[in-house]
Length: 98
Image (cartoon, rainbow, N blue to C red; front, top):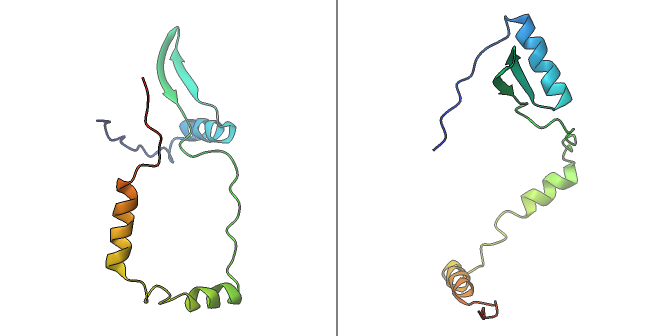
């Protein structure tokens, strides 16, 4: 089981903050050394690739969302659940020959 990582606030440490921003910008992990000894590896937490901006919903999107409310009301849920379990029991893979 992995240990929980304890956060450390470096906002008041300008040298560490500059180093962290450089690593985050480059996206490349760095090994911090003391003479010939590797001490720690610092890696960026979040991916450095740019994410697409979130698309804003139009009025048509909102109306389509509202019109979908209750669209499953006529579904027999007990039969749906039984069908799902039956399809999971049925194997569609060919038998393995060793």
